[in-house]
Image (cartoon, rainbow, N blue to C red; front, side):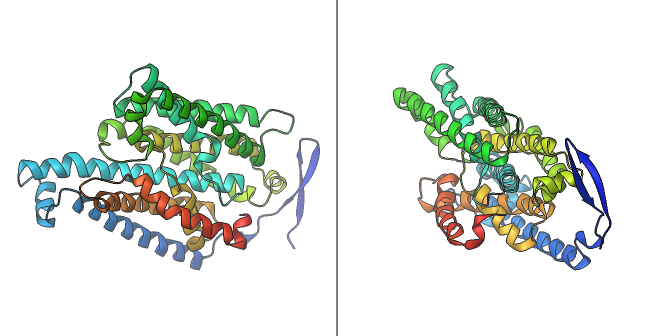
Amino acid sequence: MAPIRARKAGDRVLPVPEPVPDSEPGPAAVRSSAVWAGAAAAVLAVVVIASLLVGANPLPPSTVLDALLGEGSDESRFVVWEQRVPRTVAGLCVGAALGVAGALIQAFTRNPLADPGILGVNAGAAFAVAVGMTFLGVTSPFGYVWLSCAGALVLTAVVYGIGSAGRDGGGPIRLTVTGVAVGAVFSGLTTGLVLTHPDSFDRMRGWSAGSLLERGYDVVLPVLPLLAIGVLFAVLVAPGLNSLALGEDVALAQGVNVRRVRLAVLASVTLLAGGATAIAGPILFVGLMVPHVVRWAVGADQRSIILGSLLVAPALVLVADVLGRVAVLPSEMPAGVVTAFVGAPVLIALVRRPQASGL
């Protein structure tokens, strides 16, 4: 049995177990995770190719290849380079951000049915966009980006300020309840603005459905630094989340700064979910479904879950986008609608599973 040391944490003296050699994944587990990650990367590559080949404007694969190489007609190069490639890049960024944000928020709240919207991120982004459209005359996707990010940041700060008030600080349950309540209030305010200003509703309708249509580099590139910082925070905080999964007292005993982990998770989720919402609007269920699929495949290590979500979620978003392009020809169905069709049955299945009661 490992010897026990003692460490003072505030007014308590907590036992600190010595590190156990077998606590790290063994070689077999590492190989299994590597194989699974390679398979997920291969699937993502196939989906990216499909996103470039499939569209409302049918082009033969040879024509798409010629356009990618800078050859072929002006029309084919325009369709591929000005429409499909930027749209695919946007789908990759949005999917990766939502997948990692979902993994973080589920681990942080220890709630397997949580998604990024539980902290009011989507509600804050939508309210800011509605205000910009109604009172500031913002009509371009480039304007949505900054309004959405600002709204997500402000509302998450409000949720954390309210939820962390008091001597005990902001625990996951209190932050979750606060996020749901504040998000509901701002969702109601957004609905009121939209209904009282029909012109704003017409402009906001496409964005609020969660679409990758006409999402070019002018929308994606300004958000990329925010998404990169969010992913970096997620990678750095993953070991702390592994400790928190065993309980706050155990995490403290292992030397984890719980408050710092909470702040890092909130910052990461805000940047990732806010940035994804800024690009494509609110796309639901991706952050809910993907971490479960990855967790079933690789186990409970948050480092593996974050990496897996980074690969699987973009594939899901691109598949939804490709299906939306051809489902209702000659029109298109937004990717957010497709993910809702897929996500609702998955949510019902998760609720019915006994293991869904906790992480």
